[in-house]
Amino acid sequence: MNWTREQRNVTIAAYLGWTLDAFDFFLMVFILKDIAVEFNTKIPQVALAITLTLAMRPVGALIFGRLADKFGRRPTLMINIAIYSLFELLSGLSPNLTTLLILRALFGIAMGGEWGVGSALTMETVPPKARGFVSGLLQAGYPSGYLLASIVFGVLYQYVGWRGMFFVGVLPALLVLYARAHVPESPAWRAMEKRPRPSLLATLKQNWTLSLYAIVLMTAFNFFSHSTQDLYPTFLREQHHFEPHTVSMITIVLNIGAIVGGLFFGSLSEKIGRRLAIFIAALIALVVLYLWAFSATPVMLAIGAFLMQISVQGAWGVIPVHLNEISPDEIRATFPGLVYQLGNLLAAVNATLQAGVATAYNDNYGMAMAIVAGVVAVVIAALIFFSRERRGIDMMQSAEEVAARA
Image (cartoon, rainbow, N blue to C red; front, side, top):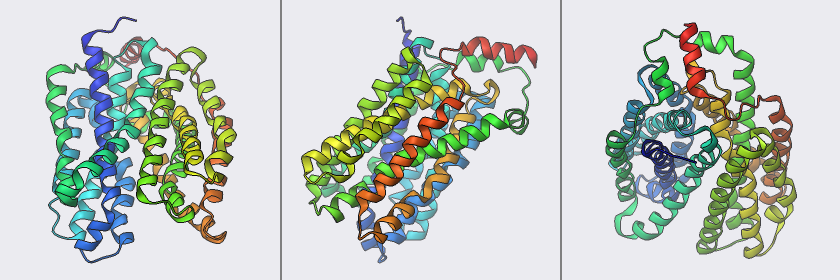
């Protein structure tokens, strides 16, 4: 497979963009207690910052997606990365909790924009045969960011404190310089650049069944990831009473499984199709469910976590390419990110739902996680074959056809 230097640069920039976006997000997870102590409040009040970040992501997907569809993927991506880096820096300067909450909400807007713009730029640029692998690589950016945040917290926190963690989070801004020097604009966007295009609402109305289906699918996908991640550290600490070091090691193993799963099933989808790859990955969760949720020893739980995330992020690894391939050409920078983030918003009740089930059954977090993850795995396996299979479509030709009709 022949790659040009520009195609490699686009892939590197998009992967690092999502990795560093996730890195900035997950830094917050490690310092909730410290912020609560400094601002003389409780952890749930500080944790509201995470909720606000997630809730504002659909707004960012819409704003930055529209900018990318109108003005180009490359400049929008650079602005997007610069903005989320700025809000990360300002978070470290927060004089009080209210300011921090506002800044984390604004960070959520910027975070919500990066995935859709980066994935559109990449999928429209790389060779069609490479899309499956690149899709898995892009999605692996999320657990890569989590892993990086874990390492930075372990190495630097004792020296820089919670505010310093946010200052470290400004480093992604350097990626803007790389993008400016080495990343070209999407050829598919250039094909439509000068042509009039229908509005977002007109395009969504014309494709309303696809839009509704994609939001439902992405709600299920977000339940899949959140149900296996959000309360997992709590499960290890509260139900198994493991010390922080053991929890950290299992979390690292979990994220390695996520990266492996995304790369493997993303690549596999190039051979067997997007829908079948997602179907197989989702059903693996049912096979490893008992090992993952009901094992007793750290080693067995780590193996279960590794295999479960191969399933979850294996299915997710196909999503960037699949959503871009089924997306209307006119709104490819908006559509994937918007339906993804709306699904994320609808799945935001997961932690409350699972915690409620666990509390009702004597703090049995394993059972609560197993119920939700098992049900959602079946739902995804059933839903995915209602989608269209458009593996390997020529996005350049498709964009030119849209431009010619305009």
